[in-house]
Length: 100
Image (tube, rainbow, N blue to C red):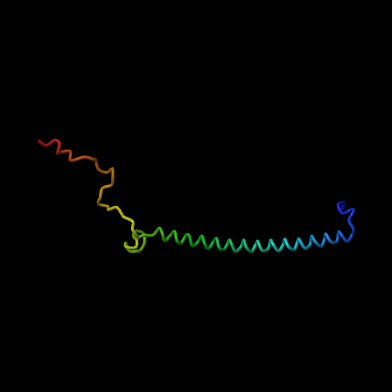
């Protein structure tokens, strides 16, 4: 109490009452922030579940679900019968050069 040495009893009591009021206000603010954090955590969990659901929907097409091929959108698929680049050598028929 050395810092209050020159203060009167009324001044000390006034400071005490002000500190109690400040303490109440800070506790109220902390309680409000806790409830806001709880609400934001719930919203975040809801949003994460929705994002996961939408990502799962985007990943589905007619090959991995029961959806019809017409729902695949404008993706052009590669026909399985066409050769992929690098599978066959370039150039003409090798026999055509040997023929007389």
